[in-house]
Image: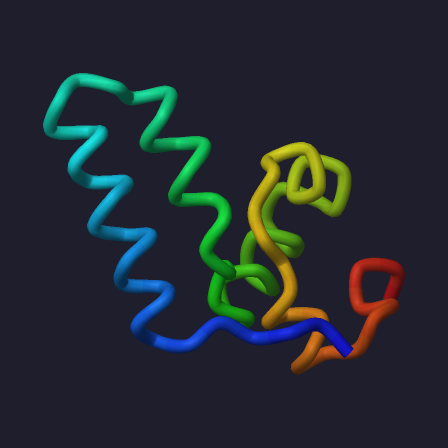
Length: 76
C-alpha cells in the first residue's frame, strides 16, 4: 500500500512550491506541487473529465487515490 504524506509534509511542499511561483519559476512550481498527493476526489473527477491517459501524463502523485480506491482504480 502506498505511503501517505502527513499534513505537515504536504504543507511543506506547498510552501516551497509557492515560493518558486512567487519567484517566477512556474515550471519549478508545477513540478514540485505535483509531488504532493492529489486528493482522491479530485483524481476521480480528473479521470472522469479528461481521461486516464491525461491523468497519468499529468504527473500528479496519485498515491492517496490509489490508497482509497485500490491499486487498479484507473482501469475500472
